[in-house]
Image 1 (cartoon, rainbow, N blue to C red):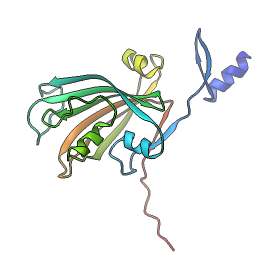
Image 2: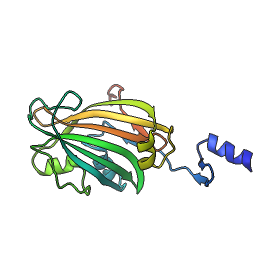
Image 3: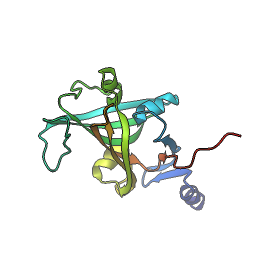
Length: 192
């Protein structure tokens, strides 16, 4: 039985929690970063998947060297920390930074921040995303329901307004065992 469970874990079919038991591994979800949606929430919702945000904190910060600043949006910055859940399972521990002048301080997580900005006449589009990997720290492990040291995919970047000005900075620590990001870098196909 131990050998069979070890093989299933090695093949990614199950996950084992020492002292607790073995469980069926949640399937990976492919997310197309180039699908035309401004955020993962809109992208996944369009596919019929349920996305929720649990707001952990909303903090007003003074811009300084350690924090992002927005050249075209002077003043204070607001940091939103939130847990994103996909189909009620933790997907990412996230932070979004916005200029205080446009930040929705009453955000309760029912919509994405990009959807709220769009409804207020400030639509944004994805401008840049960088991907890296790291090991989960205690904070990641607590919120993402993984062990300390588990692989986490870090997605960082920014969104721009219709004039091309940076309006939102983002960082997501995503469960690597649940996520696969896809970007089309191929050439256009010709129709014959």
